[in-house]
Length: 304
Image 1 (spheres, helix red, strand yellow):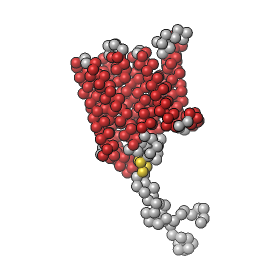
Image 2 (image 1 turned 45 degrees about the vertical axis):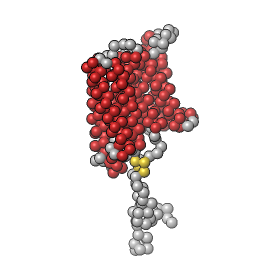
Image 3 (image 1 turned 120 degrees about the horizontal axis):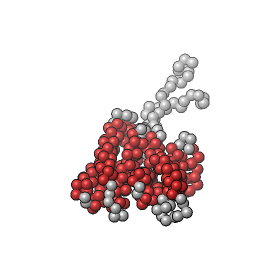
Image 4 (image 1 turned 90 degrees about the vertical axis):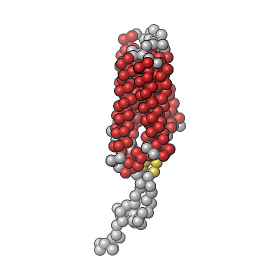
């Protein structure tokens, strides 16, 4: 057969249905979750001058997210090779950002840890670098999803926006929780910022689902999976019901009554919902059907 002539297939031959992606599941969802809340915690703690939160954010990313990635990749050398494509790959850019964020963040919190040989000025300079790197860590997973052209549900600029605001929400939630656990008075402006972010994320989730319904057929079907069946229960009841609506109620109680218990419970529900939402979105990712090439008449029959 001529190299420039396509293979002629019969009607519906090799036609298959929507194929769920099977590569990214709970390990990648865990890496997404830990990266967003850890980097978000560092950013919020940096601006709140809360050193314990900054330290916790660095450790969550440096230990938690890195471990989840290594478990997924299987071998550390794969992790190193992933850095090579930084010019075009958001995965590479994210790994580089993590590599900058963790050591610079540790230098920033060195005075808090009692490491006296690091001058405050040096720590502050490294803190600025860590802050910029943390911002990249917060959002790069969303751009990784956006770049996944083979999964239409993810191929939307809503993904980086959703990731950013969930990272901010996780950062605020953990900052408030750590302040309570350390015995400090929680920052009032963070209480109301948490309420605003909960409401905003609720709206963003609705927009993501509705937007998918007017796009590619695979995105439409993926958004349907998010609202029906077993995955629908996880998404609607877990991510939306518990993670957003339930947390909003508990945070409202905490603000109105000053209850630290309600605040801590709200943090638990928020973080659970935070994991559920991205696990659900990963599992709802579908590849479009593989369709046959259009039939062409043989050259002789075409009069050639």
